[in-house]
Amino acid sequence: RKEVEQDPGPFNVPEGATVAFNCTYSNSASQSFFWYRQDCRKEPKLLMSVYSSGNEDGRFTAQLNRASQYISLLIRDSKLSDSATYLCVVNPMNSGYSTLTFGKGTMLLVSP
Amino acid sequence: DADVTQTPRNRITKTGKRIMLECSQTKGHDRMYWYRQDPGLGLRLIYYSFDVKDINKGEISDGYSVSRQAQAKFSLSLESAIPNQTALYFCATSDDGTSGTDTQYFGPGTRLTVL
Image (cartoon, rainbow over all chains, first blue to last red; front, side, top):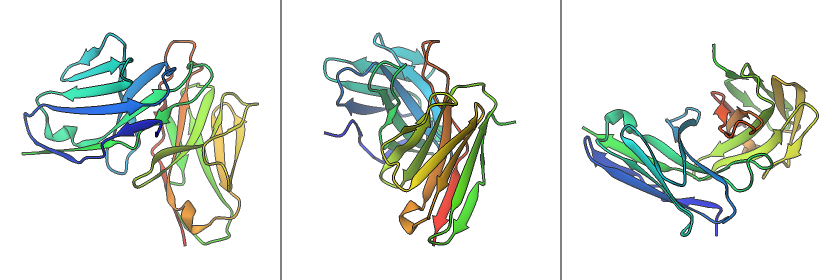
C-alpha cells in the first residue's frame, strides 16, 4: 500500500459547485496532516493544516478520520481560481524527527 | 523578495555533465530539503538537512549529492547527469518543529533537462 494515496482526477466541476477530495495514508502513527495546492508549473503552497477536530477556512473544510486513516478536503462554491492540483501531505512520525510525505495530487478543473 | 529562491530556474545540459542547483532562503529556517517532481510520480525527497552539520538521504538520493554551506544555503549536485534526471526540482525549508508546525515553504523550482 502506498504511503499516501489520492485519486489523480481530474475533477471537472462548474463554478459554484461543491467538490470533495479524499486521501488515505498507510502509517497509523502519522502525526500531522496538510493540504497543499499546486498550480501548473508552480511550487506547492500550504492550503491548510488538518486537525483532528476538523477545521474550516472560508470555503475550504478539512477533516481527519484517524480510525479509517483518511483525510478529506471540501471546497464549497468553487471558483475558477480554485483550478489547481491539491496535494495531500502527511508527516508519518513526530514532526521533530521525520519529513513530510506527499501524495501525487488530485487535479481540479473549475469551468465557467 | 521571495523567501526561498532557486538558481537557475531553467537549465538544459548534456549527459555526463556536472550540474549544481542552488537554493537560498531568508526565512531563518534550520531545515532544508530537495525534491524532484515528475509527471505522475509526485514529489519525491532527494536529500534533507536539519541544520548546517546535518545531511540525510531521502527516498531517491542515488546520483545526487548536496552541500549545506550555511543555514541559508543548500545546493544540490548531479555529478554526472543522465536523461532520467530530467525533472522539476524544488527546494523547501521549514522551521525546527518546536513551534508546533512543520509547514514547508517551497522555492519556485528549477526545470532541468538532460539531453
